[in-house]
Amino acid sequence: MACLSTTLDQQQQSSKKMIRMKSSGLKNPTNASPLIDCDDELSRSALFAFRAKEEEIIKKKMEVKERVQAQLSRVEQETKKLAEIRNDLEALDDPKWKEGLLVRKKVDLVNKELKSLGQNCQKKEKEYREAIEAFNEKNKEKAQLVTRLMEVHTFTYRYI
Image (cartoon, one colour):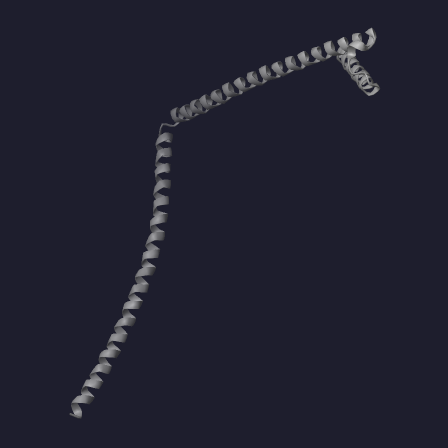
């Protein structure tokens, strides 16, 4: 860790020197003094070392992530196996258990069907009542019209 901090310090110092060189007008580092060349080489090597360490850390991080994912998938598979084994053990414990479970599922399915059929039946009954009411109204209207027709017909025969 101390080595890493000294490397970072060296990088910061070298970047400051490069900024000073650029601001002072030195565009070509080969014209600079040998001391600056040495610092430049040190900063490049430190930067290269830093990048190498960073890449190594990323690789290790990915390896650890892959191992954790693999272990999690194994755990999930084992959990599923344990659940199946538990169900099998319960079935062995009570042989009617599985049969009861199947019957319960069938009852649930029939209940769902009954609910939808009941709603459909209520809707049809409502439509039926409305149709009967409309039929009865038309029958009353017909009876009134027939009565009126009879009155008009009778009236016309009396005066003929």
